[in-house]
Image 1 (cartoon, helix red, strand yellow):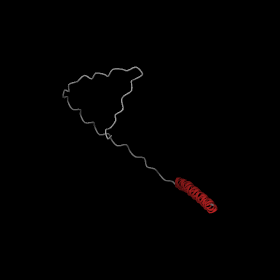
Image 2 (cartoon, one colour):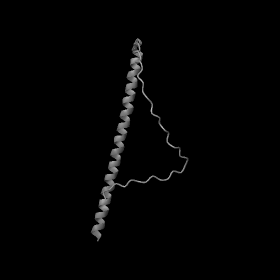
Image 3 (cartoon, one colour):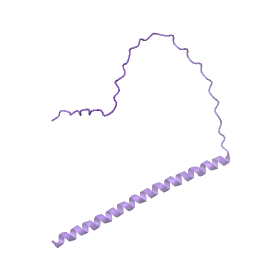
Image 4 (cartoon, rainbow, N blue to C red):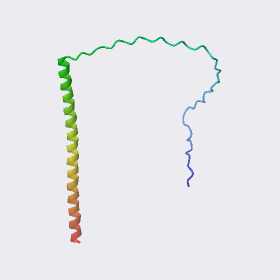
Length: 104
């Protein structure tokens, strides 16, 4: 009962190639490769922040915050509406079951 059951391999249905034979190779020590020379670091470009680009960055950041906030608020509203409708359905079903039980 507690022995694992190993599935059997089904028969292949196509062309089967035999496995490749791997020939052993000998390793001969060689001369170590010389260390590469250190390349000079490229000069970094300095980004200048002009008043126009600062205003553009602030405007883009504000737009992103507003869009993300709108999406999150709409998701929260969708959850609230769904939960309210489920609650109303539960109250109606409870009322129907209770009135059906009183009739019997």
